[in-house]
Image (cartoon, rainbow, N blue to C red; front, side, top):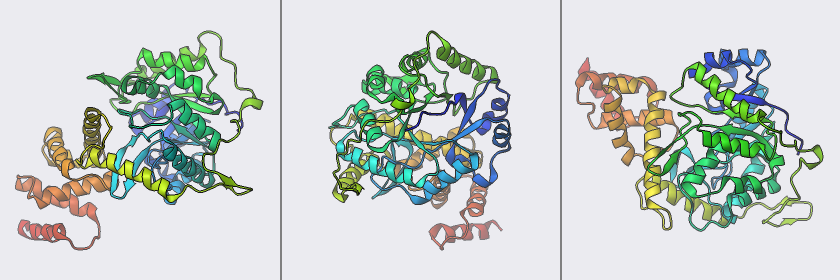
Length: 440
């Protein structure tokens, strides 16, 4: 593993703050959500940043490498295309699962994988598949979690260390997520930093959140608290990070506040003596520790299907409880699972409102929209992306002769028909045609 090239201090590029990002002085690089850009139609702001020599790193959120299924080749290809289009030195993703295939369910969020031998075997094989498919190196991020899995066999530090040893993957350490897991799961951030191979560090994330009822929510919509900057200092006392990035995804502050948060990060990185850089000779993980035996010259043996099946059953039971209202599996903290379920439904409502901003307008404003969507979400788990979810929500309302106002119902019908495209005739299609005939 070669030493990571210097990145410096950066910020997550988002369309809402694109102009501000271009004006920020001393900005070294940006990170963009991979799924939010199209390789052939990059935003003008990103193109201008690249022309100025600002590096751009795509950060994926939908691969689900911790899921029981092998990575989707189409998603891997899409991530690779974005890396090439952006001239990125690496791509990043998460140690998480985001969906199940039996039943077909989408979380719309990053969920923790169990720190068990089975889950680690599956994750390692999925990571190797991804590495073989991507045109640039891969780094994986530790995620924030609201709950723990019962029956875990490894600590966070052991899990991450063995992942690096077995795959050579780099780590993206989010110090805000370390703080989240300290509050929510009782994990000691210093113990994690002491245990993991920091020579594998690609870069670092810093973000804000908020505590409600004893639960820390990693919102990316609040200022970075001092306790997170303290963790950045803890990490820097152990290793000089190649890059540090500020994440902000919502409730964007004025430009001056963003600049102030970047200045606070720089102050941490320059305070006191610097940690020694990892020497090139040390910048390689120790010898692989394979729990799945390999035959001579054959490389790691594929994970046996019973292992993937066990992981799949556990993830399906959990995700079904979170988004479909089935019973909470034995051993989980039921209160935390309820908190997570509410958070997932609220995020669905928020993202659908951004994907389809016409819906809150048609339904009479944010509050009526949110009430209607949360009612829909209780019985209709997401099975595809957010755009499909928006269409399914509208379809569900129309089938139930909602909204009650005929004019609003006609507007919703028009909106749905304009976006649904050519699909096989179904009950809603026949109904919409009938309604359109009446309106005429």
